[in-house]
Amino acid sequence: MDNARILIIIPTYNERENIVLLVPEIKRALPEAHLLVVDDSSPDNTATCVRELAETVDNIFLLSRPKKEGLGRAYISGFKWAIERSYEFIFEMDADFSHDPKYLHDFLAAAVDTDLVLGSRYLTGVNVINWPLYRLLISYCGNLYARLVTGLPVRDCTGGFKCFRRKVLEAIDLDRISASGYSFQIEMSWLAWKKGFRIREIPIVFVDRKSGESKMSTKIFREGLLLIWRLRLASLFKRK
Ligand SMILES: Nc1nc2c(ncn2[C@@H]2O[C@H](COP(=O)(O)OP(=O)(O)OP(=O)(O)O)[C@@H](O)[C@H]2O)c(=O)[nH]1
Ligand SMILES: [Mg+2]
Image (cartoon, rainbow, N blue to C red):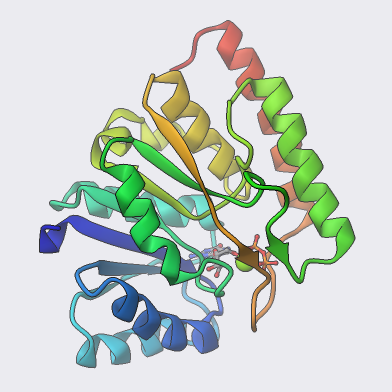
């Protein structure tokens, strides 16, 4: 595949320990990919680590943002950065090893004739490792609920391992995206679906983070509940 066409966007907040290990693994799995780390001025100096990595590893870029604004805002900055450049396959990926780089090839294979590829934990049973039961239940039931209310025809709509074809991001008005937590994932996929883009899920096994702290909060959870109904209403008024 053409060298400069794959970009993997990784949002980071205090992922210093993870990012130094993850970058070489991604480069091993997919040497031709470019990487963009979008860091919200992490107090643990994740950005400094990324700058150091960029001295020895090719095609790693850092987008440093002044303050923590949630993963949604970080991705939107990254998407705009990607659109301004010549990338065709634009990935979302977490920094905490929940998303195994070994799947990157599966995504690309699926993206050849699809517009949005989603890594799905719930396509073949439940493929989640090391999550406490309550967290799995929230995620699984939340997905079921989101699917029923919004109509979005995917098994895992809150996952954050995705590959967008460029045209999908170009078609979405990124400045209108409101959500910042998990619901950002639902909103992006819902907009792609409403615009008639082809969506395909591929199975992935999701592993809980190896190190660092979770940024999951009740605020993010509430935002998700509200967003689902906002999308349902927007469907009635034909928001696209
Ligand atoms: N730039 C930026 N990145 C963020 C922010 N919040 C989370 N992230 C990153 O987004 C990715 C997913 O966040 P996680 O904290 O792993 O959230 P999660 O996967 O839902 O929860 P855990 O895996 O339990 O920690 C990680 O790479 C985080 O570092 C943020 O406000 N800004
Ligand atoms: Mg995580």
